Image 1 (cartoon, rainbow, N blue to C red):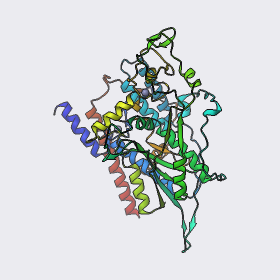
Image 2: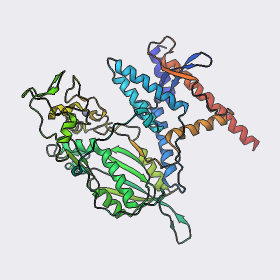
Image 3: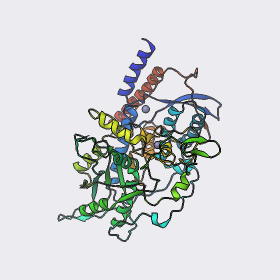
Image 4: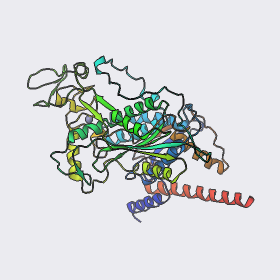
Length: 499
Ligand SMILES: [Zn+2]
Ligand SMILES: [Zn+2]
């Protein structure tokens, strides 16, 4: 068989066996013995288009995590674990990737790898130690403070658990909520396509998508104030047919439906950014001494901080639409299972996947997104006469490389799964760790903590002579996986006989 053909076959067998098809080769140096070997680490992608086995595994872990916290009846104990070996090498590995990224000619692939590692690190709850000291927030004048929404406010009880109810039969019920929150209308749509594209408010749709995660944060703050307890949630951000993001949220505990609707209606977020209503006539030019200048007038553009100091009104205000869906759910019911499936259904797809028949609508939306600033550092600020934060030579409006502008993200570059800190006792990494411990115990191998300073991990370059072709590496992993499974089957058969 030719090599590419053999590789394709190996990829198909890997998929059938749940083995990662895009493993990341890492060289592990054992400082105790001085030996080194190449180890394939699963890519960990959440996207089916990249790696179906990893995406499915992640989806199942998320479902388990959602189920775990929804109807919890005792307070979770949240104690951060000391960094494990896994987490330590993630951090070292990220530092390596960053160094290579900074010196690479085309860093886009590495940028993607860094994003993936960041996602993993964030799930492991190590964000603070990776991003380093945070810069102090700028003080804002009082007139820019967000008004408190007009909502009832209950006294806070120190609990994360919802109320229970006793039925006529004496049984205790612990209801929870399933809520869907949607953005407002931008114009009439049929099957996700605007009836009159010229009248559809693409600009508003683009800005709403860019700031959606902030609105969700506000909603949670307001929800907790009204509920009067430390409400916990597991939420996913999904695309609607009309290509706007919306939110499905499993909430522990319950509130009256009318109150949930009232909270959604009262929630809003103001974006205190410079105005983007009037573009400059000409693209600003860079000057090594002064920064960006307006070529028409020769004047230096205001810096980001200067522009912020001059604001009188927000650039944008975002709210939810009228469509708020609230459902009461009892634990252990079919309804609960169905909601969990529904919540996680599209997690393996990107927000912009599959525009079937909606390509023109998607193109118009992406056009609108192209010149909207996605963040303070976005080059698009130049178009509106403001120097982006950390301005540097070579910035060009309309060519921002951030995720938010890409077809896969459609303006929403935030995380797809949002889980509150006290949802369950376990982080996703601990859920993974559980399964590992269980397998090792079943195999009679104690899951001993390894010396965290024993190994050094380094990325393996593509042309490394020690790196076997992908097909060979996949077949090796498949064989490992099958050996494991056979061993586990034997074990459980022996146990059954003994019993
Ligand atoms: Zn994978
Ligand atoms: Zn941008």
